[in-house]
Image 1 (cartoon, rainbow, N blue to C red):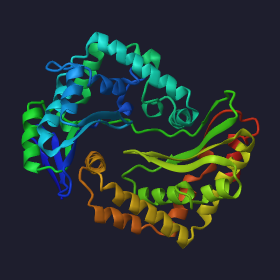
Image 2: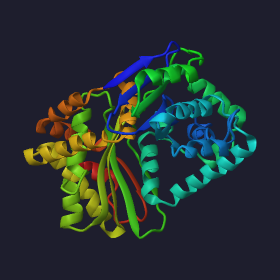
Image 3: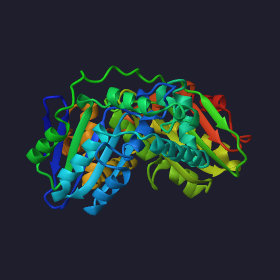
Image 4: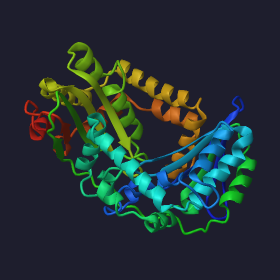
Length: 419
């Protein structure tokens, strides 16, 4: 059973007890991510996440690593477009240490100049690695083409130029501005006692000031365009995509079913048509990236450049076919995949903690599992077809490619094929 308590300063503490396990995932989710950055400071959320482990007023970088590993635990973090998370996995008796470490790195990091210079170099290597990995880079190009000239379209990693602008004062200012009590959630899942976690949270975070919550975010503006990187490769990587719903939208679950049925598994339309029947692509998948107030729906394919045009045409044709009709068998398979994935994930304390945090950040409540299952079950074939029609409007098509595209239809030609 999930329990949630709000401290006097607005910080929320949530727990989900799992009696059959001996470990706990405990973490802090912050309602701040890459979409909250200015163009000049693109990448600061991710750099701040890296620097949180590089020393505090009480602990050096090596002391942080040694203390968590001395109890057999793990400490990590990640940055997304809408939030940043810092999390640990420890045995039940070591939860006080985990909470203390999390509070220390989030409240008392020193951002040492030498550590900052080294970590800036590490992130620049990350950027270079993505640039040399086309099946990763293609999604950054797609994001940029879909949301041009706005935070939602920029890379989470930033650029060497923007990273070079960030010093200790810049990081401290960003942390003080974005990491406020009302925008932070401490979550524990596993062998956890809620009242004990609340007490630990109050000791570690209770003195943080309440600063009035988050300012309003600019709503992402989907443009629908194209971007191409014509580097010399044997393979063509492409993403065809469209405007999609946000997590709060009534059509969210229909969109997830559509994505799964179209290209979410080995039995999906695109996998069967493109890979199994014709052998045209080594990788093809549909995806629905849903954010707080908007989203993207797309299909990625990696194939021999000679087959790019045929693959792209099959994608738009299959999306158009789903707009006409979805049969009950494929609907049932897609819904079963979604429900199984949801329920299997809940066997993991990390997945439970992640879900609790996301629900609280998006809905301000934790949606019970039976309600989630019921929402998937309620999706009808007509809902999926209607979503395919709404998404697959040709004039809203976004096309991005990496590799030779001389044999690929233009964006306008593919848009006309969609109608």
